[in-house]
Amino acid sequence: MKRIAYIRVSTAEQRPDRQIDGLKRISDELHIETLSAVARRRPVYETVVARLGPGDTLVVWSLDRAFRSARDALNELHSLQSGGVQFHIADLNLDTATPHGKLTFTLMSAVAEFERDVLIQRTKEGIAAARARGKRIGRPPLLSERQLSEARERVDGGETLAAVADDLDVYAWTLSRALKRGVVDTLL
Image 1: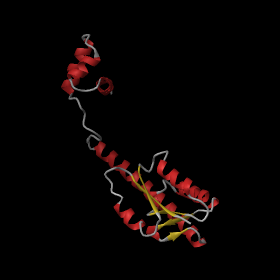
Image 2: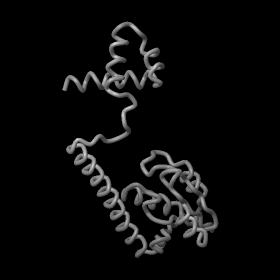
Image 3: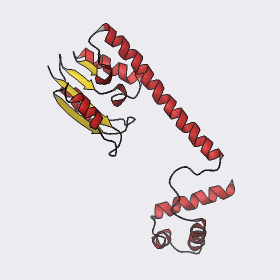
Image 4: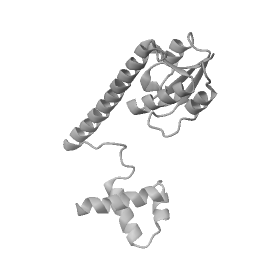
């Protein structure tokens, strides 16, 4: 009976130390994945789950480190338990082998999904508020209005997009998109 821990961080800049420290004492193996929660495929997770057999336990530090939504969590729990595998959430000291553990897991899955949805909603509201105040969101443009205007004149004058882009030290695709956006912006 193995206790295999799955650790996930969203970016290379995030450190898994807290999860490692919390899981190394209660797990036989640790597997770390660096991947966004919304990624369609999770190769490390899939490998870990494939190795689990009846009587084994999948261990995670917290619910949001393993699943994207309550439905995802409940479906995965059902799939694991169908194969005789239990699930343990370390920061809640929650083991789904008991009826109380299953109920708490179900409730915590819904709470985790709610928290994620609220965070997404607040982020969208913050972006909308910033845009309403005239703030530009995202990366700064690579080309100034003057550079775009000169590039348009050069391309309209017969120079190739690639040559103009090379002179501006950007990719042709970048210049093409910037010029298209400039046309749309002036039409609005």
